Image (cartoon, rainbow, N blue to C red; front, side, top):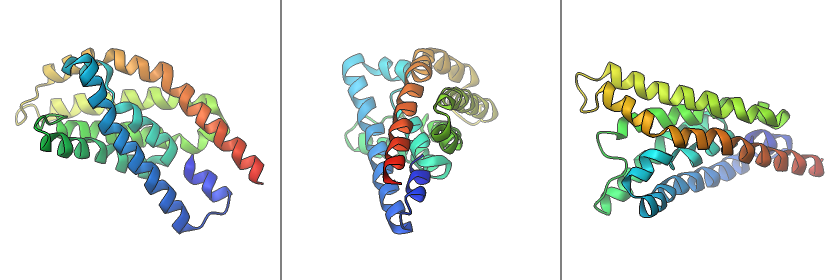
Length: 195
């Protein structure tokens, strides 16, 4: 959404890259901080249940589009792992990290594919989030199945993780489309004012 609004306003390439970079850094920072807050209030199981890192990543995909969203999806678990490892409690765990990189990259990229369309039709935020959840969780399960023989995460363990995160996915599907549609409304309204 952001790229299309900036383009419509005639922003320079440098300005577009600067603004998108700032938004991407903010999204990654939120993807690191939000899980920490959930873990402090709801324990380690809270993260597996509510999937807090997924929320900013989905928003990042919607705001930044598929390419920048992909970068945010890849960067978020890596940055979180590096920072929390330095603090002595890595999140996500090293065994889960490659799977989360793939899964969150898909979540953000799929949501990003809807970015321009959401500006025109805010209701498309709902299928965007639903498609992202199905594709992302599907990639996680498929990866677990394909690499089961060489990975400590079995397909059964991955399936159990998907089942334990069902509340988080429902939360994403119920709440995030309204947030994304609201942001799209504000962006398109500001775009009209500047014309």
